[in-house]
Image (cartoon, rainbow, N blue to C red):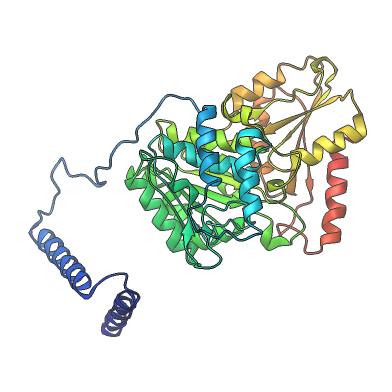
Length: 458
């Protein structure tokens, strides 16, 4: 025990010396912080020794945190908001040298915000910027979050000559809220745990932790199981932290495919958190704003895309952000409801593969409707029934997913949605059961994907 204490003291001393050496704090600040900490320990020790054996009736096990401010259920923004955010990305500071490969991307983003088309990363920036303009603080951390793991975000730009930093979303206006984005250390457990706690104490803020790849959340499974899932049930402690987990079967192998949707849906109960996999930039935009502005304060897990980040079909227009709201199920407006005999449910990226395959197999008069389930939990049962009621000749339902049969949303959907389908046949289209989330050979992945989308319409 003594050796452990000495090791902790040694580590604390080295860390303090490093902070002083970098100029982050002064010697006086370090000594003051140590004195404050020691005084806190002494005070708590005294309180514990003097405490009664039975706590008083008004004893609280959870600190009193501020209530989450709720606003009207309006997620659309005005064209003026789009223009403000666009201008921020189009006006670097005087003397700031943007890398010549980055500058055209910033210029395209600035133009797309007001003219379209808007990709995933741009819709996210607009969502964050719009919340900042409404006075809601935004905090994002992850292992490559400032640039974006897939070079899609550009939240912070580095001067190629001086290494100075420019964060456009901090220059929206004098009355905006604070925006902080960090490239965190490679410790999912520590970083996710910190963001969870930050969100508990700041319910007015949008707080996000992003995995570099979805399965990296494995390193923080204890935080997920003990706090994000059941923190409210066990301690009455509410958090609104968002986990952004890149999830997409792109043939990059098992370690870069799955954010483990099935695990989160297995934990889902009592409306403890939201699980979503949006299929369009606009859907993601409205989802982030709904989560922040709603009165309830609970965590959310968002499975974010990879190839869809730059897919030309998977874009939105400015009008999609200045109107509408988040839809748990996006209907199929491309079909004649009277001709539909089969409905295909899906979630996320695979919707675009299915649309392309439907055009190939069924032409301009499709008999299959494709419904995109954007919110996997809480179950959008009423929205589901409303959509199915549109098809008078519906005879069959299919759930189509990239993941193996024992993974992804299917096990959860088969258990919970089947009783809501009034006896309609409900089938699965997926990869076979597997111990690995994906195959390791790209050519085999391509073969599997081709067979999968063809089977969806067989």
